[in-house]
Image (cartoon, rainbow, N blue to C red):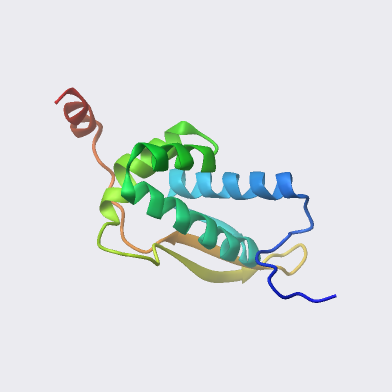
Length: 134
């Protein structure tokens, strides 16, 4: 058996569980801007979230619907579109970084933090409501 052409990690899960895992991790990253998980999951999340960020930066209706489908909640998708993507327009790729942290105590697995490369500034709620009314 050969391994050529097989892209991605399986994590010992079936396909629907694997997709749900990546959706949940991506949603957590968008909502919290920094999460800690195992190193293989973080590396796989980079591939997943980079595509969503690129679609969010384009910003048309079709890409907006694809991002909503790629994240668990609509609030995370709206936050990605309205707050995060406009702050990442200076980059063409490499929006997130993975940093190794300590080994997990229970099983010795390498842990990693994944976060956005650029410092994201939170937009005050007063400005958001003024933009919506305008």
